[in-house]
Length: 319
Image 1 (spheres, rainbow, N blue to C red):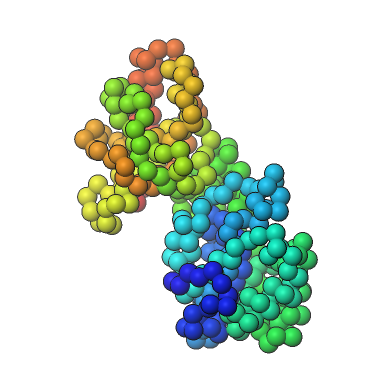
Image 2: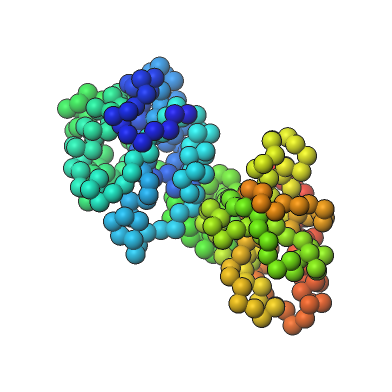
């Protein structure tokens, strides 16, 4: 997949094309339905499929106080978009100046002059241009002017709306299973393993602590069943993806002022040295909320129970 940032520098092999537009935060099942149709239409017309997106999120520039937390940072998002079969990804820098473009200026500069779009595929609620003044009707009018077809897709979903907002809400509630239903995969957080207080190792449950700058929206505090994948190892290598009990919280039992951390204990493994490795943590099921225990012994009993519950969940899943 070609990734580029200026429509004036569109690679020759990507123009003309079929194109879609969106933020694609999370690359959830609704996004993938649009992208799948885009790739399908591209195949039917013998044209490459290109997605146009923005970085940063428009609300982060226009209304920072209302900007949502990003579900999947750009590097993760771009990998997920590539996996849909796209031929190209145009990532436009979103600035206040960029936001002043009228719908016609945006369409002409990006879709027409840059990408030479023959077909534009969008959801029915797509908005674009200054103050989101452009909609599907606007796009159809501009298509007649500039000679491209517009295909508007209705929302899809199994009785629920597949949206980035619903994913954020589910993660804030700790309902990672609901988030996965919308995403079409377990939610992921990516980070580097760093040293912590080593309490887990002292207790017999050594954990991989993710760095504070980990990428991806962190779910609510609690214990989760999930997977840890080592990005430095090639797919298929032993110990690349392993079942894990994941804890998010501040370790209240120890009466410290720890920052909120994400840490993962790989089930039944105390021989792993993961420091400085890049890993992906995937959240499959919420096990329990974060609790403060009266003693270390009570904590150990709870941790052993957590591990068994995680094992019961994960042994039923082929990863």
